[in-house]
Every structure is written in C-alpha cells, then in structure tokens.
Length: 117
Image (cartoon, rainbow, N blue to C red; front, side, top):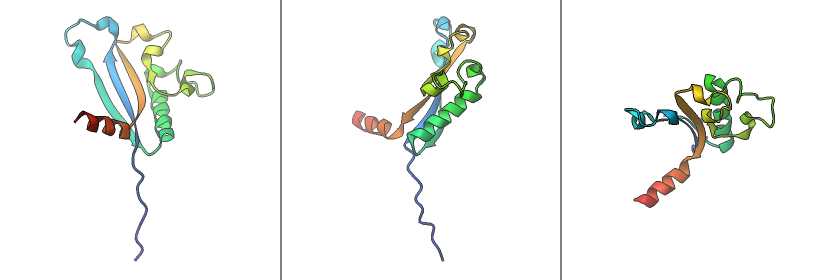
C-alpha cells in the first residue's frame, strides 16, 4: 500500500481586503463601526499571494478602467499591493467607502502576537 508522503506547504502569506468609509463621512453616526477586514486566502509564497491580490483587484469594479491595465508595465497593476481605491485619480470622491487589498506575512503576525503576551 502506497502512502502519500507529500507534505502540504505551510501557508506563510495571506491576502486581506479592508473596507473603510471615505474620510468625508467622518463624524457621522456609526462611522467607526463601519471598518471591515476579511482574509481572502492564504498562500505558501509571497509571489502566489501577490498574484492572488492582483487577480482580486482586477475583478473588482472599483479598480476597473484605471488600475487593472495588465499591459501597462509601469501602471498601477504592476506596482504590487497594497491596492487602494483611494488611489483612483478620478473617482475617489464618488465612492462612500475605500477598499484596500494587501498581502501580509502570517509568521510575522504570530511573532509579534507572542511578544505582546
């Protein structure tokens, strides 16, 4: 009987998406309660996480038309995360919220949490 000795690589990187209200809404009721943060996925390498962040950014309507040009080698898409809708040169004021898609190292978070204990 053959055993599957393949070891699953440790997930060391994650893609996170954060949403927060536009600065012009500060001071309104519930402003500070509206911040959201979601983990979109975990990856073994930084390169995989960056590619996943780029794919997510390119799929979202808030980034389309100004940030998702894969052919522009000097463009926003190739600059790497974090990607933020606040960087939109034309439409930042027409959104009530901003979205940030970023990549973070998981191990570093665990180390800093251990230092705090």
